[in-house]
Length: 239
Image (cartoon, rainbow, N blue to C red; front, side, top):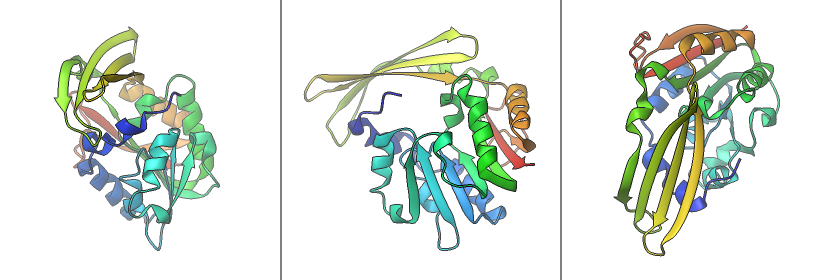
């Protein structure tokens, strides 16, 4: 992948703050009495550092060196083992809790998705908990994602952002985002493709990798999933 511009990583937490989703994952790790955790696709580590404790070892894995670099400088970062890579880079085995948060599963395309699930299963002990969320494609959230000349402040001065959205293939949404640093006129362009898989597809893939789906929620307060829920939150067990 092309890595993120470090200046845009600096505003990542502004767009993705700690909130009820992180509360859900922290609560689930506690319920599982997790002693060893892997946060796959950990980004800047805003959740990752809060999962670590004296009684619990935590590994944060992300393919972005810029994200991991930011995470390593976060308060509490010394209590986490940070790894630049994907599921193939998870160190060791025997994890009893694994999470993929922030809809990161949608950024795992094609054949990399079932491979990721298989890698996680190999890394986890029997009975371990895997949890993640993905947007419900039936809701078509991407219909509201395009915008023109959105302005905001950042550590690097005012930003002007623009985004276009397209659907180049069934189940795939492409975002093209342009960010201009107003002070210099410099522009950074990013293209991201997101996979929108439905509940049946994800359930099938999870089972094929060696997990049982224990629950599917439609929000962060554990309301059972319905066809109109904006997200699908999966809680799975390694079998």
